[in-house]
Length: 378
Image 1 (cartoon, one colour):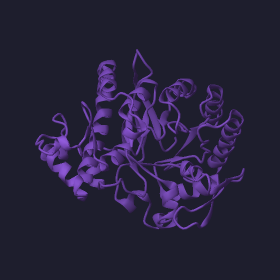
Image 2 (tube, rainbow, N blue to C red):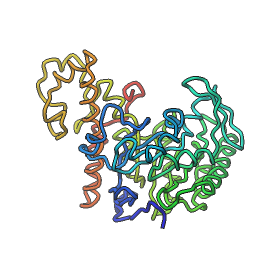
Image 3 (cartoon, rainbow, N blue to C red):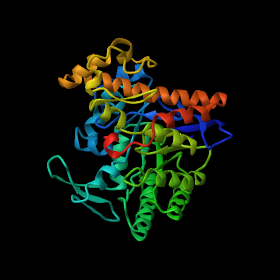
C-alpha cells in the first residue's frame, strides 16, 4: 500500500464535485480541502497551535526555500519537518520547480536538471529529479511532489510539448529515486500549458506511471481564469477516480468552488495570508478591506457570522488601527481570520456535498466573489 491513499465517498450528481477522504501517515483529511502554505516551515503570522485551532489538517512546505535555508540535512537532523516545526498534522512539500523556473534570468534548463543562482546570495546551485527526491525525503513530508518543468505563460505549442515530455521523463526518474515509499507518497504533476491536447497527453503519460495521487500544475500563471477552467475540464477526466486530484497554487474563493465543481480535491494558495497582511479580509458576504477609512469607527466584527478569534474578540476599528500602525498583531489577526474563512468554506462545501445542497452554496459564494482583478487579488 502507498503511504497515502484516497477514498471516494460521494460524487455530486449535477457536477464533478467529490466528497472524499485522504489517508496519510499523520491523519485522515476530509476532502475537498484547502492547504495553508508554510513556505519556510512556517505559515506566516500564525503558530502551529493556532493553525490547529482554525481547523487546518494539512499544510505545505517549500522545497526550494528549505533547500536554501536552513538546508535539508539540518531538517533531517532535527527529525524531519514535522518535528522541526512542531506540527502534528500532515505536510505536503512541493518540488521547488515553480520557484526555480520563475528565476528566468538566473537558471538554465538541461535534460539532466536545472542550473540556477540562489536569489539570496547568487550561489551556483543545481536541482535534478534525483536531488529533489533526496531533499524531499530528508524533509519527511507525507506527500512529496515530483520535479516538473513549469512552462511560462504564454509559451509556444512546440516549447510546451517538449516541456511536458521532459516532465514525464523527470517523473520517471523521481519514482526511481524516491527512497521512502513506506512513509512518504510521491504525487505526479500534469503540465501542458493552455493546449487541450497537450494537457490530455501529459495526463495520460503521468497516469501511466501509477502515482498514488496527481496534481495539475502550470495554471493560474497569467492566463485568463476561464482558460484555467477549460484546461481543468480537459484534464480531470483523464485522472483516475480512486486517487486524489490536486490543483496547485490556486485559491481565491471562486476558484475553490469552480475547482470543486470540476472534481478537484486539494487546493493551496498564499492568497489568504498575503492579502490578510495587506488589510483585506475574506468574509461570508465578500471582501472587506479593513484598512479603509470607513471602518475607523466600526465597532463590529470583520464578519458577524464568523467564529474565529479575531471576530469573536475584536472589532474592525481596532484591527484597522493595528494595521495602520504596523502592529504585528493586526497582521496576525487578519491571517487567522482569512485562514479560518478558507478552512470553514471547505467544511461547508463538504457538508453541502453530503446533503445535496452544494449547488446553492456554490451560487452563494460565486455571487459574493465575482472574479477579482489582479490588483484586488494582490
